[in-house]
Amino acid sequence: MKRDYFINLEMVPKELRSGIEELKEGHPITFKRRKDTPEVSFSVVPAEGKEGGFHIIPGDRGIHIGYARISDAFRALGCLFGQGEDFKSTYTEITNFRMLGVMLESSRNGVLTVDNIKILLQRFSLMGINTVMLYTEDTYEVPGEPFFGYLRGRYTSDELKEIDSYAEKFGIEMIACIQTLAHLSQILKWPVYSKIADTDDILLVGKEETYQLLEKMIKAASGPYRSKRIHIGMDEAHGLGTGQYKKLYGEKRTFDIMNEHLKRVCEICRKAGLKPMIWDDMYFHIASKTNDYYDLNLQFPEEVIKNIPQDVDFIYWDYYHLDSEFYSKFIDIHKNILGKEPIVAPGAWNWGRFWADLPYAYMTVGACMRSCREKGIKEAFLTTWGDDGMENDIFSVLPVVQFFTEMAYSGKVERETLKAKFAGSCGIDIEGYEMASRMDIIPCEKDGEKVEKEDTLFNAAKWLLWDDPLIGLYEPFQGGRSFREKYERLAIQLKKEIRKGDLSERLLFPYQISKVIAIKCDIRKNLVDAYKKKDRKKLRKLLKEEVERLIKEVRKLWKIHRQMWLDTYKPFGLEVIEIRYGGLITRLESLKNRLEGYLKGEVSSIPEFETQLLRFREDYWADIYRKIVTPSSIL
Image 1 (cartoon, rainbow, N blue to C red):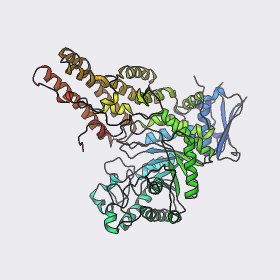
Image 2: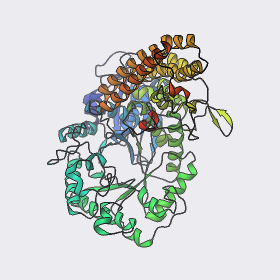
Image 3: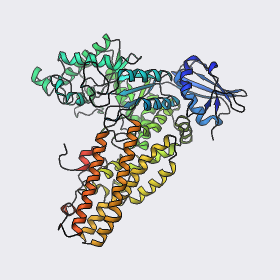
Image 4: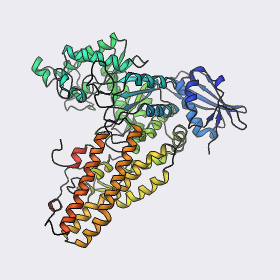
């Protein structure tokens, strides 16, 4: 059991007091002096030529923390909470990173509540995070634009101000993070914006009304924050200039359209006193003969580079590469071609799934951050995404954030140190969260061999859950194998990790998913086998013991997922999740009804069971619900 630490608030530097007061609940600190409770004191110390760092100095009278930045002081506390009894002599950490950030998804239906953002800010601070962005495509209030974020749970200006003020207590800079070119389909679908749409996802470059709206957006997004930096997006604008733009202005080189638009948006930022940053992939896509962002053989016209505004920072995002060498090469390309050091953004791998893929995230983030340290990168932030309806619990990324900061401060991650520091920042054992990631990893065929490797991208739980119980589009991906034992074992293990009153309670969600998949993964295969053998006795047994039980467990999962959502996100967007569960439950009821009819002789056949299923891709990744549930058009 970890000891408590006494902190005399009157003796604490003023810049730390309000943040430390917020940590009173749920952390091992007390503001009342007690016998045998070591006292923690603080002072500011230089960072020894680096951007940040701290010392933890144990002594006879207690423990002293010397810190360079506010965020370093809180990271030191996180280390102390997790490893306090291990410190017998001075412990030091330094970092060369000026920015260590997290971008929180708040657009793909799951808009985090203010209270949950505050919880995450506390946890992040104890890890050493000093920058947070809320990724908001349309989910922020823009005065005079009632359809902006309409029925989507948009943040009010007052909510963003509250978040910013809370973050400041921990030395965390909140930076507005929006889109100003593409990824705007949620806005452009409304008829009122049809005149400023190039395509259904991309704004119309060159139109004055476009920049009038962008000025309002930039003012609304940045206004609630103290920061004078802003992330203006501009990634993945595939099809730029091919829609209404082409009809109005003719065909133009994509490079020139990008530069034209970026100049105008940077002018708006300049006027507002803001320093912009953008995702830089579009420039690389355009320069690549294969339209590949990560092409190492790029051709940038000199005049294009010359015409890129000089006051914009570039973000190199990369979630995929497992070797540091590639990151190093691509960082060099940024420096050589764009003439400046990029901000680097690895990913937490929480998208397209119910729980973050922690093993894969550790590998990609580790490779990325090793390269960043070698290349002297000063700014990095970890991205989270909620593609396809934010089915995932965003709290599942917490171990990745801890790993990310360990790489930034230490350059390596020792297993026991990671566990201890995660316990210090989050108050729970990291192994339960890591165990939940195994929902998505199944034995598979790779290069002709059966493997269950963590360096292979899986999201098996998603397609095993949503695959239609009658159609079975994704059943061939199981390769005729049973995963029942795996998921039964995982459910038992996860149940042991759940404790009331702390972050381990969130494991109830992956626990119930595992229970459901343990039944569902084999049910169609077994039914089809019995059907083809005309084994009515087995069909009756499966109907009674498996189908009816599965319906019951799916209903439980729906309610658990619903509660997780309402405890985490605003209610808007939940309708998408519930429609999916409604569809699954209805299809299971149809399966039950059809089987009953067949067994009673009311129907002569079940055509879905007589169709030979085909495997249509080689990997084990399926991230779009509508492509999993049916081969027919669903929208």
